[in-house]
Length: 231
Ligand SMILES: Nc1ncnc2c1ncn2[C@@H]1O[C@H](COP(=O)(O)OP(=O)(O)OP(=O)(O)O)[C@@H](O)[C@H]1O
Image 1 (cartoon, rainbow, N blue to C red):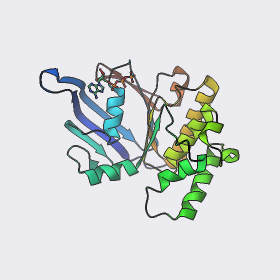
Image 2 (tube, rainbow, N blue to C red):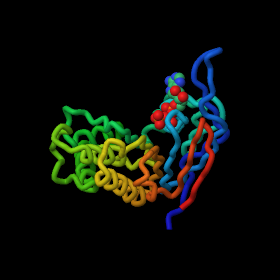
Image 3 (cartoon, helix red, strand yellow):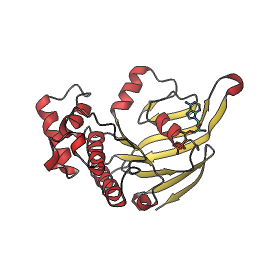
Image 4 (tube, rainbow, N blue to C red):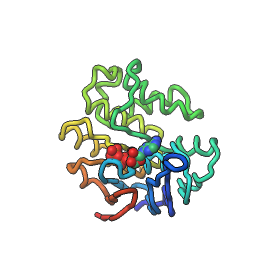
């Protein structure tokens, strides 16, 4: 068995949007722990605060109140250098896969490794190709995004998110644009790679077909975590 470490720890987190009289509270007293290798699904109605919470955890937005720790880094009051370090340890997968159209599948994956300065071109190329094999795209390495199906593009996005062996993957509706078979394939690949690399996954989804891959499902409503289900 792997020793599970705490990857994300959120304590009494509040968040507000807007200024002065237009200021309104969006997140209320959020408490949450995510451990390595754990797959957590975040569900809730539109506008309940899911994306806001995901972007806070991802170091993409400033923490205003409360504590948010990623590994040993406190994000509340963190410097830009710290946030850059944090982001290097996180893989991001969004609904629109955000691949660059003028780069091949391999180049899209490799680009994310090039943010890590201490890796040679040869090594990054080999690792990117191995990762594309892992997501079952070994036969599409030199294809451009326009030559791939929706499910294949999303698998390239998974390879890109996981190739740097991040401690955490944040996925915002990764199956939303996919038919049920491709959606299922995409989450099963995420699950398998997460368990192999002991990476935690926090996934926002409305897709009932994939709920069973979660170790834990948390529900958010009007900015409050209301229920946690364990599997
Ligand atoms: N930049 C912003 N400025 C002001 N209000 C915002 C901003 N971003 C989000 N909000 C508001 O915060 C609330 C939560 O939004 P958020 O995008 O986190 O919800 P969500 O649960 O991800 O919704 P969906 O499922 O529709 O994507 C909403 O009421 C939204 O209108």
